[in-house]
Length: 273
Image (cartoon, rainbow, N blue to C red; front, side, top):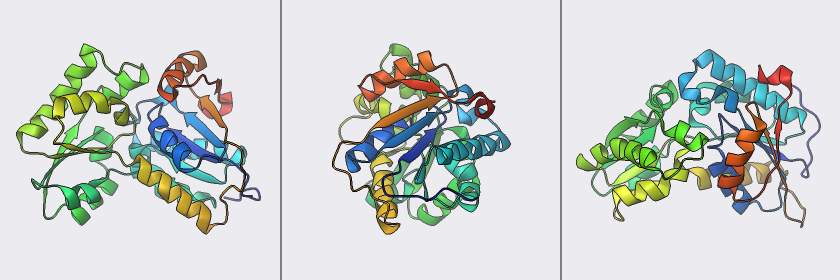
């Protein structure tokens, strides 16, 4: 799909089914402090794990088109489910670099000491063909335990990161993996890094928790550099936020997770339906 002329001073677009992708946005801001960033939380359709492949692909295309319309010079798919279902379509339709996240199975398999790795993710991510290929490529010499985590995305979407209800859910999903000998836990959903303090309290200090967000930020830098699109600015970059859900509700959660006051706008109505 044709895109406007891109310059190094154009912003970077990032999207997720909701607020989870802020964990990726946080790492992008650390890695690229002078880039202007655009973020879309598709909260009206969250969690993507409850949606059909057709709906998720349609949403990903619509959001990417919106971000390109905002002059985004690159798009980051900050959602494992959307990566598994729609990233190939996005790369075929849009000429800007498309950087995507996926569960960090490879580094987990390389670094586990017990040869047992647990993957926490949504059902949609774990059942996807892209994830199956990831397991086939990197899981031959280790035991990889798959743990769907229904309900965790919803807790983060509410900003409920540490209640007893959230802790009980995390225990329900993490303890069986530890019992089976997992010494490494892969966070296969961008919402889950906001639950690391709870996961750490349950898993203990000897268990490695792998969040791939920093690797995505480094890959974005590499791709921008390769395309000569790294910003040459010296002032700190800005962030702009949109949602397909309730701006007021999402704004309160984003402000808490981003730890700064933010203004969240509603995406255009033609895009949000």
